[in-house]
Amino acid sequence: MSGTFVGMPAFPEAAREAVHDQTLRGNLRHATHTIRAKRRTAVAEVSDWAELREAGKRIKDHTLRHLDRYLVQLEESVTAAGGTVHWAADAGEANRIVTRLVKETGESEVVKVKSMATQEIGLNEALEEEGIRAYETDLAELIVQLGKDRPSHILVPAIHRNRGEIREIFAREMSEWGRPAPEGLTDTPAELAEAARLHLREKFLRAKVGVSGANFMVAETGTLVVVESEGNGRMCLTLPETLISVVGIEKIVPTWRDLEVFLQTLPRSSTAERMNPYTSTWTGTTDEDGPRNFHLVLLDNGRTDTLADEVGRQALRCIRCSACLNVCPVYERAGGHAYGSVYPGPIGAILSPQLRGTASEIDASLPYASSLCGACYEVCPVAIDIPEVLVHLRERVVQGGQVTREGNKVVLRPAKGHAAERAAMRAARWAFTRPGALRTGQRLASRTRRFHPRTLPGPGRAWTGTRDLPPVPAEPFRDWWHRTHGGKDETK
Image (cartoon, rainbow, N blue to C red; front, side):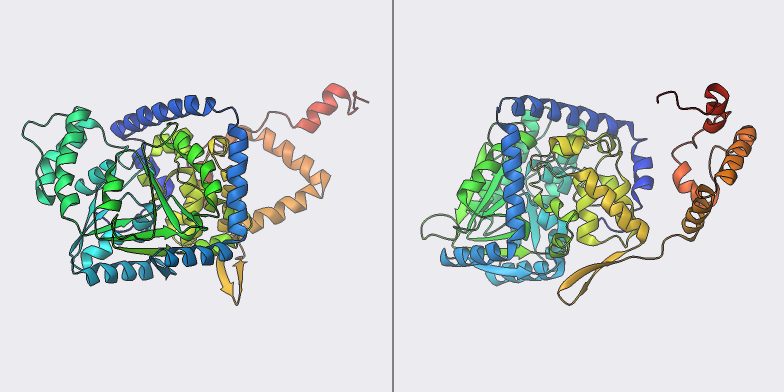
């Protein structure tokens, strides 16, 4: 499995290939339509959904404004409960910390709870380089790992696979990772789930080290929370002797009372359930229950710089529910791999370019991976205005600016822009300040309209490669107005 998505082609190129994959589009259409229909029903049951949504937004905004204070409180609470806190500025530092902690146990394998933060930093690949094998235990993540694939959805990483493909992967690959698939395995969901259960059981019973992320961290008690549907996560959180949790610094909430809001909105927005089948919480260590050693690795990896952007910081409210993916017409047709990130869909289009910057081709293209229809904002349980952030990031890309740090300040250094664009803007300014020249140009354009190309040459191909130029009318508006109304405004 590739350790990184960076280096993939820009979104338009990757998406162009994806939309021609009929099997992929069929899988995505069936899955996303099913999930969003169920979500609509689950949300409609809650009479105060709008109030819960606003409460979640305010809790997140308050926490982000005072993140420094709550992170210190969290560290004190975790330490007091018997855990150890580590701070990681970037992916490399986080991987070194986790690798060292695993090596100190003397073990060469770990079991993992589904975690986007560890995917973000490429932890599995970093561990493999040091001779440590990581086993994914979430069913969808297991499918992705066995298939040497990449996740394509936040909630359902293997959403691009159908049952027949999953059966083939299990039959072909399971024996290389442990217990082989049963003879005569069919593609019925019950048989596939049983094959995964048998395959993973021996790993749960043998593993001494577990690795997880967390959906939330409660500052006042140092409690971490994982919500899931299968129970595999709870096996990883309770059976190993050592538990290492890698969590983004934005996942913190101040109090248990705040957590209550998200335990209502997250399951309905993600799995369309009233509550998650498994909600696991742990606070430090105890003598007779759970792991004997607990380590929390707090991950920055671009989050502090994102926090400094007054418009873009709202992406850090995200609770990873995936509701925005399931309603996005672009995601439904292109799939998650085209986004070149472990965070696909609308949220990935605004989060990845902020965490990684817009220097690479793929990251510079992500803010344009949207029709700006606004469906993502309507379903977001923490009211992230994704279209607003997309436009904001497009401005950054056009300017060619990069976020840099000067002392204690994070600033955007804009570039001069494209030479052809500057020339076009100067020409437009000259024409619009000279009515006679503008009128002459409009008439000339109308009379030569039959000779106009449908696409632009040179740099203009970036715009007309996926759309036609608007047709020029046979008669300019000014001439039509003078001909039909004599130039008079009849509304007065």
